[in-house]
Image 1 (cartoon, helix red, strand yellow):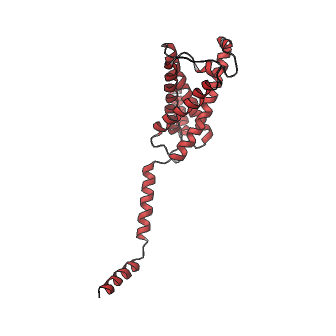
Image 2 (image 1 turned 180 degrees about the horizontal axis):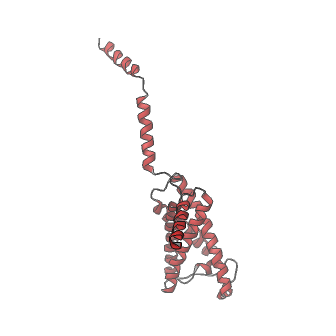
Length: 205
């Protein structure tokens, strides 16, 4: 019975969570999920020897010199900074989805992931915001893939958590516009049509 009660509580929590409307919590939580997915992708590439660095090293090098990142506590600090940054970056993405709708949300997430890659990673290396450096082309490509994973995961989480009324489907909008046009056509006074027909007959005579 306790197991069933726990499952019911989880189900209720999930139902409540899927009705969120506040932009800040939704964007922050979705950005956090996207960052965790991004880290998982990065760890896989790092373990396989394709990528040179982890995002904990990149983020930590903003405040700490690279040789001090050899210590575990400094890498933990870098990971915390990375998680906070990724979570905050989810808020603008939610604003985009809220304005444009959730149609093609994975495509929008991919575009946003590419934007974050260019903004944070490329400019961070180019203008030496990061003290640690990456040299191989494979590392640059894997970081792009990681940011695409971030965009996909964040956008999908936003659609999952957010109430449907926040960004309605495009089909509903089209139905509303059709209804408005039909109402406007039906509101035409039939006497106006009769007068038009009468004027045409007068012209013929």
